[in-house]
Picture: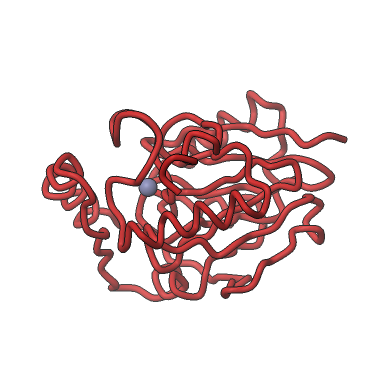
Length: 227
Ligand SMILES: [Zn+2]
């Protein structure tokens, strides 16, 4: 079986379902998207229980909001980097979006993001797999690929890199409106220099196409001028 990639848009976030010998979901979308998620799965004729792993690229509200419900429904294991674990497991933590990298980011951060983060609430759930800085192979989950620690947007950002060169990068890069025009630096980032280092690492490891959580997939070549 060759690997199949299905984009599942939930709210403003692209989640991705990767199917080979096994099925892995990248990201859980914003809160209250479980119905949309199930509808999309059924249109793809995929049984929710086939999903054995939910990988969260980082702990921001638009990536983890429906993860607890998806986990309960699928019985899949939940994986996140150790720096994001507390947001999934403990109550009362407040998410602070990373600093804006552009003026546009500053506007979005001051308005939409601040509001969304303030009102976002989602059920907490246990993390089954706590990721660290080491590469984590997905062979046990029937996928030829691995999870790579790729900080820069946030300190808990990870990417899934397939053996065939597709990289699911969460918010390590963004491509297109409403976030930004064209492919490149996310509009929010802890450290733009570290973002570039993570891009370079992924490209050196064989990434050919970046699949961002916001915007369309794009060729890694497009980042060559900036890495
Ligand atoms: Zn995001």
